[in-house]
Image (tube, rainbow, N blue to C red):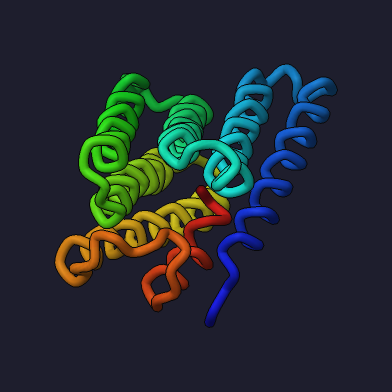
Length: 202
């Protein structure tokens, strides 16, 4: 397994923008009565913008702007997705908890880009935040299931896998990786697994 990350990012960017357009289009019909549909379209659009900053504009604009804005938009879209899911399931939860988690993650990503250049620590905090959001999404799907039980199990398992892989990725870079100058586009087994499993759901 040796995926080209830049190609994966390009496809993910285009896919996010097309999905956002599709969700916005169907929201103008009968599904427009479900206000979360338009919100989900905005969420996927924000994710696509994040990938544009992180991948397509990498090297075109300063790296610090690409990294902080790209990861910030992607993490923010994850927090929005979690809150939309909670709304769909009528789960009473303070929406600002997920945004606070993301704000802390973006702060440390910015710190380890601007103050202390350490890509390993950036990957760790990105993975921890993603793991928290994915795992929380899986938890509410399993705990607050309704008549559509099978669809909840399937979606919950996807979120659970993403949460576990993100957690393992954080642990790997915390305990096993010692090179703080490695490239985000480097080739290793952990990165390859992360690209294949996580990028389509980021």
